[in-house]
Length: 227
Image (cartoon, rainbow, N blue to C red; front, side):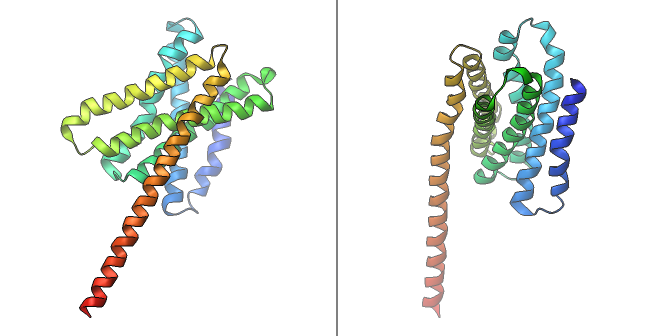
């Protein structure tokens, strides 16, 4: 099974890696962070495999341990980007979601291989939406938070800890519901969360475009007046 997991990773990631040579700007950044997210999933899979025998059953492990390991690992590239590359909120949201998306792509592929006899098209569709959005929402939450606090040194430690715990708690709640008799409500939870986040981000982006257009118009008018 381990060989199959690595084979899936290679088959998915090699085309994306090769595409980086042809991409530029924001597209290259997004694809690069999808690659990073899938690589983190591979690392998390190995780490969880080492930790799992110490906790006995899948329910306990999935609701208490894996949310911690996975959210910490997913947050690392987001924290690096926020502190070293850029604190632009729009870019942070996009690369954060890309990390979660890359993680979900490989995770769903692994789950698919491990449950070939128990899946159907509906399962694949629901799992794709649920897990994909869940991982994306968790990392986006960290990204949005880091854009707000990374320059405030007094908030760094407590703020980063709070963001990680929020992501871990959301992840644990999702896993708990999905592993219960109400699993389809669990799969719907990320969608319910994603929609208002999407609406809010689109509204903020529209406001930024309007402000930029107004500022440009004001500068143009000022130049005409001076002439």
